[in-house]
Amino acid sequence: MGAIQGIGVDIVDVKRMKEALDAQGNALMKKMFTEREVAYCKSKKNSHEHFAARFAAKEAVSKAMKTGWSGKFRWKDVEVVNERSGEPRIILYGHVATILKKSSVHLSLSHTKTTVVAFVVIEKNK
Image (cartoon, rainbow, N blue to C red; front, side, top):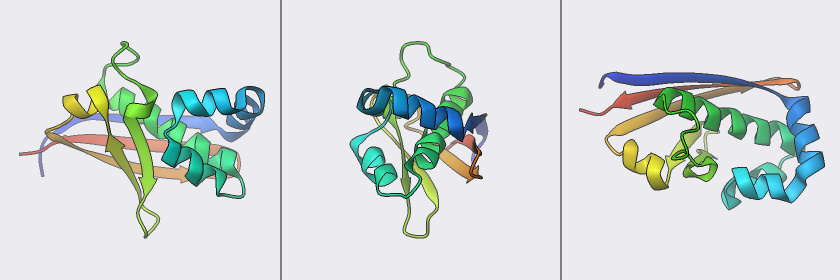
């Protein structure tokens, strides 16, 4: 294992995500989520819960990077996918991928019907 570069956690109110999606719909989806994320979430019964989880994961990555919203972090540079086992995994693109090219990003998600939490550890590879 390598050294920990950063940790990040985020919690999202599922109801607020549903309200945001109801109000902004496709514009919000297009701004924040990749096409693969949108397709995955829309395929689920309570899609807003899955959008909330992906939003929380992206926020947790930005916190673990310690950059905040410096203008270099783009929502779609962080994509959440699920392995066949259901395990969530982060795929990085663009500037975020460049910054973290020698690192591994570990993600844990958990949610109820009302709340989602995402926890991220960024580990520097040896």
